[in-house]
Length: 382
Image 1 (cartoon, rainbow, N blue to C red):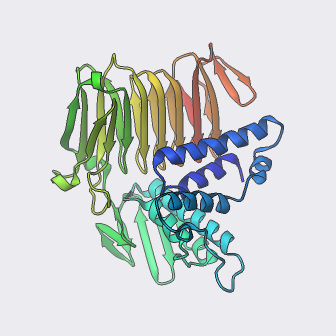
Image 2 (image 1 turned 135 degrees about the vertical axis):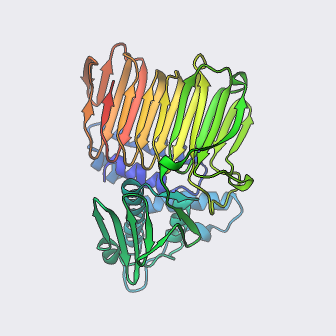
């Protein structure tokens, strides 16, 4: 297993934890792997020296459960399924297939997975409630230019390239599976604007965006306030509005006011920031949809999307981009140190004069740090 695969799986299976705790854990194991590779080990050798990922996830979730007053047994890793003798492997394979399945749907069909999909999947896997054979799951996915078809026994789900969803041959506008809501829709139809708010930029040092589906666009503008708006196919009612929270200089933007994530419409987000404002940090975390940050400079920029392209124009002291599916285009100025990892995707440096040192690509003084990690998609520098 590569470093990217290990960290992606770890982060995905810890979705039940708060974002800050997930990031801290992933950063810890990233540093462990980096330390070992600097000593001469390959990524695969370094990962192999770590504790089994099932044990890591079980221990961390168990510790958090104990701290919150839950009994440790509630968070233990699943026991082997009777008769199989491969319970841990089975759980890991099903977890991987489930995550790949979601990524495929998002990538090929533009479908919004609404609610805490990864949380629910992990809960079902860890509790042993998912009992689908690996072989049946692996042979049930059919991908073509027209879309994706998924079959499991008598159940058939198809998602077309245009975003249409059918269950057992019948078209549906949305569907409920195990309490999850999956909505289909056309991002080009999101023309109804709802203004979430206009904020005095003097009150904002950090911006944290937690979105679910459709485009997130953050851009500089000539106005003197931070203007935040969401866009949908039809006017929203109060229960479907996003949420703003300003506390201690940190402005948080959430997809919905409620926490259950059910029956939510597809929405894109626009955030306009005065061009002369430099944020200390900007974080964008979204499940599906492109992310763009244009015309802004600042301290720390962190973008994480499961499916969708990323475009950044501006200089950030510390820029991190991670996407499971989608190309990345950066216009970072002339002074940066870049590290780039991709399972499938090339690096195009454009007109930049690059000096390579080990895994790092250095331009100019190299003062700004850029880290890009993609599972599928290249990186283009402008």
